[in-house]
Image 1 (spheres, one colour):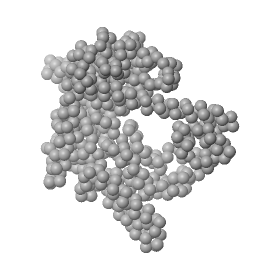
Image 2 (cartoon, helix red, strand yellow; image 1 turned 180 degrees about the vertical axis):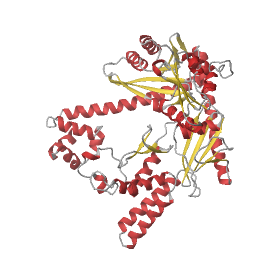
Image 3 (cartoon, one colour; image 1 turned 90 degrees about the vertical axis):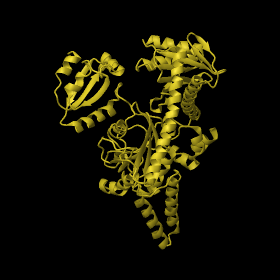
Image 4 (cartoon, one colour; image 1 turned 90 degrees about the horizontal axis):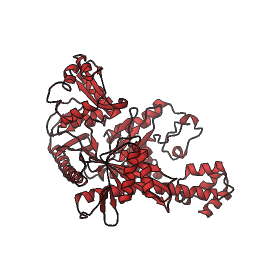
Length: 558
């Protein structure tokens, strides 16, 4: 059915509408108080239809569908859920300047606690956090207090508790006989309260345990709880700003399309988060940050002015001098982010002109190859949007059949990548004209087309299929391409190092005739490189191999 005809048949009721592209790809998801009226703005003579993005959407759309709901609130929540799940091409996207970690508490009888960077629809998440080291240390200290589970083993198959139980770091729901309700009440609920900012309960508990053991002359355990208390306090205080312990809030400052969120929990700033959004309206940011992306919502959200969007929290301007100062810090940081973004956009504009591209290359994918004297060839693919890395989209490729031939490796990566994915605005390759032409050949073989640029390392010469151009090393375009090259190089070398270490480990183990397939499998599951074996004791290796003689033989070989 014609899309306009389907829009005319839409009911005059609240709902969510979806434009689909080829292969039912989600192109755009929107909500409306009146579906018919809203949809007709895409096809009738209206100012909305004249928008360049809307024109591109209606040209690409092949299908239109809609879902009727009871009221506007339901439409808002359904729209947010669908956007979170499908991430449509034409919807405004909230872009992170970094790939932030979260704490996940899994949905199961005995919940598992772990750090993740990708979220799904099932888990319960707290964060995001800025500092991964802070987060790891925080969970380490909290596990010593509340003994929650961090292992990912199948509990039904475990017959005896692991070392974590004997070190009093886990209640061992796998084998101790504890029931789910008790485990959740003792381990998970207090952890939830701490992550929400109710930190005083944990500090009080540690102080009470310290005094109790001291009164019993159990000075070893008293010292343990004292150290835990001091370490936890020091860890949070090292974030730089300490406020009253009852303050739990988010502070949102913006400068144009750049936004900064300061997360304050238990009186401590636990994260400074940077985002960009193709909108200067604070309501749009709050919608995407809290409703679409499902980030943790505190009791209070501070903004410069009241907003119309209804959240299950107080959204208000600062009420005292402390809150005024926090908002000022958020706005200052947003201004710094805006300046960086402006410089990146300027560099992209110049890159468009230099390479004579049709559009500003807002999405650039960089490719680099790494190998060991021509062997164990691997490649990395990094993604930059608006001049900033999008680490969640990075990918690795094994090219073990390619020997000492970078152009062939690049052509292979391009074919594998873009036979399944849309080509970006620009592809960057680490190398000269040979590598650039190899990438162009790969694109042609899969029927795709986009700009390709390379950077020759010796003089940082910019290379295209047409030739080379020399620019000053402090030129914005050169600085941008160097940043992409260095990130692709780092990512490729990290992956190659892991692969090389595993290869060397396998090679050495295979030279020991008394270590058969079963023992070899155990070693490779336990260790990923030679250094880990070197750092292990003979007793630990003997227990794994079932033989002290074999353990000593293995150590002598490495």
